[in-house]
Image 1: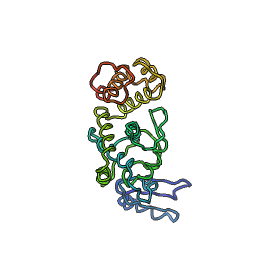
Image 2: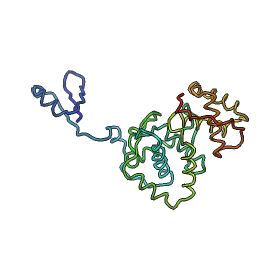
Image 3: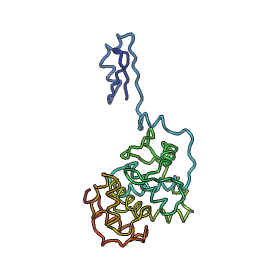
Image 4: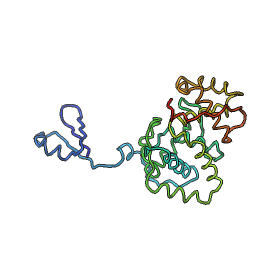
Length: 256
């Protein structure tokens, strides 16, 4: 239960307890105040932000929505947590589009790696219908998202006869295997962006451009950048660099 108490002094007092009704019963003296208002909110699995922001119109399933749901589900299979962060969703969709899926997402170079402003609008549309946790639509990279029950079945049914999209889906799933963390996906997407969009000819160039991106990127060691280059090259995401010898384990296993 959520309890909101107002009328005490000029300010509004909010008190949230595990059982708001017991709180009111315990403090029966509160009823002696004529100008005191007490409102009790019934429990809900989602926050009030999520309730306000949920789209009332059920969104139509598309290849983009289906792959988003499917990638989140597959990605979560490599984690112990039941949620994925917003940062990770952006990176998964970045690679899905890089694999050739025409998602019409406009990715740009941002502090945490490739970011698509128009993905926010899509997330708002599916909040409460396919995902939960997006809430007010803010872009905090550590915002935790979960799949809504039934969303995966709908996504699978949509993708069932779309073999080309499924092939791209599998390519992304294979790439991120072993990199299931915000750190790992930021590393992969940062390196891929640099090789795909900037003038680099060697691994040394990639390392320099990574550290020049911003101070945050200095959390990646040279060994980790080399690992990302190797994995991306070996799995066919680019062929214009001489990849270093593979290093193991993946970066998020060993720590930043």
